[in-house]
Amino acid sequence: MLRYISQRLIAMAITLFLIISLLFFLIHSMPGSIVDDPMLPKDVRERIEAKYHLDKPLIVQYGYFIGDFLTFEFGDSLKVQPKVPVFNIIKDKLPITIQLNVMALIFTIPIGIICGIIAALKKNTMTDHGINMMVVLFISVPSFVFAALLQYMVAYKWELLPILLSTDQGMTWDKIKSMIMPVLALSFGEIAIITRYLRAELCETINSDYMLLARMKGLTHMQATVRHAIRNSFIPLTNILVPMIFSILSGAIVIENIFGVPGLGSLSVNSINSLDHPLTIAVMFFYSLIGLISILVVDLSYGIIDPRIRMGGKK
Image 1: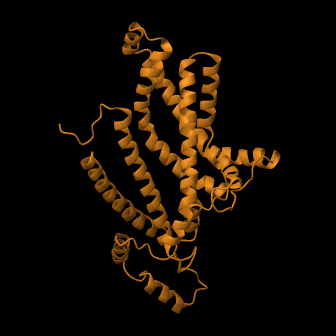
Image 2 (image 1 turned 180 degrees about the vertical axis):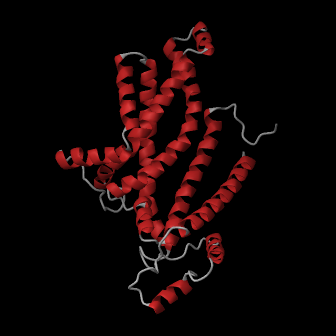
Image 3 (image 1 turned 60 degrees about the horizontal axis):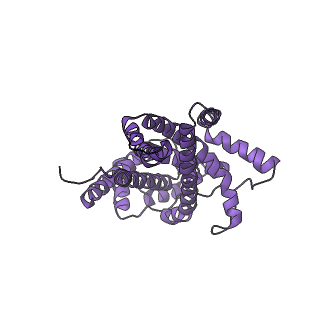
């Protein structure tokens, strides 16, 4: 297991290096620059270019960039918060993004599993048809549409929840209430995906040969389902966890801007619009890091869900 984890960590480091390198060249190929303002005096423009190596060839800028990243020196923000270290800006924004995404996962996974199990056990009943209609609706409608509907109906018309995120420090009750709608908007589509996937897997498992054998050994249908079918249906479910995590992370970029969440999502949009390249690359780096850590955790969970898997074992 330790050997496997070490190999994965090395692969993560290489992947991150390739990601930030690709981001550097992509972002610097975009039109526009911080020094393109025609109102900027020439001497000021030259000082900015010299300080941030903008007057040097792109490959030389890349060398400075990689050298800074290898020492975890992300540089200073150029425009969003001028002269403030990028790491300090991200450090202030990262906790709320993690809170939002973790709450969305905590809400999504159990609800999706429960709905999937109910739909499979009540196959071809009104309950199953109702859940399938919900699945089609949730998959068809984008998260930002749900966000707008929730803001209009729940916050504006019914005045049940605040329309924007609370600015309270810490997890106060007001802040938790203000996070309900962003979490719901992020979760609906992923709940539908888990429900549909688990229903299909569980329906197939219930009709398998080993379930018939379990019934012949004296187990009731419910006992055989709980002891064998449900657990075995969870194993393929891990295949969709990684894309689901990435989907929530990417969806949070839009949702944060809609609900005024001061996290990495709104920061990334602000940095891109401001042509603040060091901040943009650093934000994308942290998004990639969160995603790769999530992949590692999901991979390690295979050994917990399915004891037959022995990662890093001898062949």
